Structure formats: structure tokens, C-alpha cells
Amino acid sequence: METNNIIIRAASPGDSHYATIITDEMQSSAKARGTGIAKRSPEYIENKINEGKAVIAVTKDGDWVGFCYIEAWGHDEFVANSGLIVAPLYRKSGVAKQIKKKIFDLSKEKYSTAKIFGLTTGLAVMKINSDLGYEPVTYSELTDDEEFWAGCKSCVNFDILVSKERKNCMCTAMLYDPADHFEPEETKEDFKQNSKLYERFMNIKQSRLLNIFKKKERGGSITKSLLRMFFAH
Image (cartoon, rainbow, N blue to C red; front, side, top):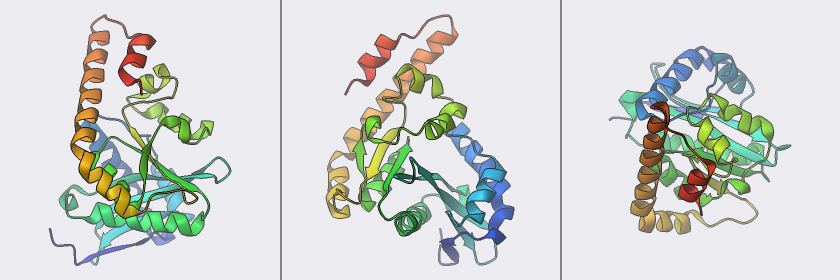
């Protein structure tokens, strides 16, 4: 895919008309993957754009290509780069990585001392985060801001998160701490060496939990003890 005609930049109020196509693609992508994301309305996306807390990718002709936004939690102690989405035509072109780098830099510019974190079910996003200097962490190292976790209520996996008492879920948590972090080359090499293990773990975790929930729908039950055994660190 040719990407020379794509512009990746901080979003401005003039980009608010892309909000609906962005949220529609977010939902479509989550449905196709069979996993969940915190649902956002077009109005929410518009607010992020108008606040200067988003990055957008468009072609020189004005076609939408990709998007990501910033959320701040815990009195700006934590920052999340959320809602990364790329139009189907431009996936696997390297655009997602460029957007993530741009939103990462924008986050550090706006919140220089904040810890930047993310939750993802995608191995590709994990690799991108690793290249930026993120490292996998437990959920306990993330923000305890109730408003952040309330955003997970619209996710199809919210019951798992609740059953696990917010200690784990289908997503993998990753964190960049400006006060104590690995250099990108270090985390990149670590991910390269262990990517197959990460992929295997994520696939097993997701497939087993989905099977358990299918059994529940047929009249079975899920116990907290079973989830604790499966997700134990």
C-alpha cells in the first residue's frame, strides 16, 4: 500500500466531521475481532479533536486513514493512548505504527511526567508499544481511577474483568514510565525474543475464556476460582 500521500498530524477542530466514520470503524473492527473496546460516541471523539488531544491520518485528498486519542486519568498522573484505528484499506501498511509514535510524542509533550499506558488484545499493537519503550505490566500498576474502568462497561469482556476483580482480563496491559523505563531498543529486543510466547499466551487465554462463556450461555457457570486459576500470574 502506497503511503506517500498520507499526512499524519495532530487533529484540529476542522477534523471533527470524521468523528462518525471513526466510531463506526471502531465498532466494526471490534466485532470482526470478536473482542471488545470501550465504546465511544462521535461526540466524545469530537471533544478529543477539539481539545487537541488526538492524532489523525488523512490522504492529501482528504480521505480518512487512521486515528488515536489521549485520555488523562488520576489527576493527570496516568495517560492512555486510546482508540487506535486504521481504515481497512491502509492496514498492514505501517500507518498504525506512525500514528502511535505521533500520539506517544504528543502525550509526552502535553503530560511530561505522566505514565503512559495501554490495554490491547492485539499482538501488532504490543509490538508497536514495545518499540516505543512500553513494557508489559500487571493491572495493579495502572490507574485506579474509577472513571477509566467505567469505560470498560461497554466492552463485551466486562464480565471477565469484574470476575477477576480488575486484576486481569482479555487485554494485555503495557506501561511507559518516564521516571523509570527501558530504552526502546531494549524492549524491542525483548519482544522479538518472546513474541511467540506472547502470541501463544494471548491465543490460549482468549480461546479458553470464550469457550467457557459459550458453555455458560448453554446453562453452565463460571466461578471466580476458575478465573483466578486461569489468570494467575
